[in-house]
Image (tube, rainbow, N blue to C red):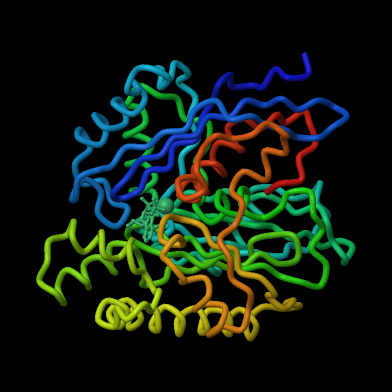
Length: 368
Ligand SMILES: Nc1ncnc2c1ncn2[C@@H]1O[C@H](COP(=O)(O)OP(=O)(O)OP(=O)(O)O)[C@@H](O)[C@H]1O
Ligand SMILES: [Mg+2]
């Protein structure tokens, strides 16, 4: 059977501080056409403040309760998710990725080679312990050398997510790194990027993340101090209004000038800091990495990327075209997806996780 994936109906679960999102895809690939998927389920649930703080699970039982509620669905079209197979990610704030080069052919590399090289870079203390995962990148321009994308995460954080998933009654297939899941959804899988690099910008509820994709892989990622909640709280404090009112104002005006100078100024003040940090990160990339290509497009995702006119302001200031992306493109299917654009864009990470969950290792897949 060409379509028999190893983990039937496996899905992606994007666990954030303030939301949990689920995407389930069906693998409809065939050997001729390459990887292709259709959407089976998409849903999310909001989390109250304080259950997960900066990626640390502080109230496990409560989070388990919300996961189960999400799986159960709200009835009607939203049916119970029966598959136990899940791919999750670890919060970007607690993970580390780096591209390393090992002086061996791809087939000769063993775990120890990567461990030894990785020790030079991993920013966690030895006492804390860590998990290390890696993947070799086949394309190479130098013989006897292999590029490896390595990912590491502290043991304590990783174990807390493994326990959470077990307690929710699910079986973990894989743990992903957020920047890799985002890239899997947002970088066009079957396109060869030659002499050009992409930046991806995920603007979420509690944090933003810049990811640089160049020479066929994620090269660099960093957390940025900008988020939907940061803007709402800034408006709330400046005008002494409720959180709901501030959230409404943010949606309504965003960075559209419209004589709304007061709200515009509050949002602009935060956006300027955001722009400065993006510029620093891009500069860091160009000055610290070998053989960099020019970033000629920034693809945005996450709910915060829908802030009115943010794309225009970023494009103007950064002098790089900056636009919210197409999150469904790597499903590679003609079937229409009935989810509004503003809603879909929040699911970039969950879609990346779902693509990994539904992946069929027997069919060649060029995505990350
Ligand atoms: N049209 C819009 N205008 C402005 N902000 C918006 C809009 N739509 C969504 N947002 C904001 O997007 C944020 C939620 O985005 P998203 O769902 O991507 O976050 P998250 O994945 O839960 O958080 P994180 O990735 O930071 O852990 C909220 O702060 C919300 O106010
Ligand atoms: Mg998110």
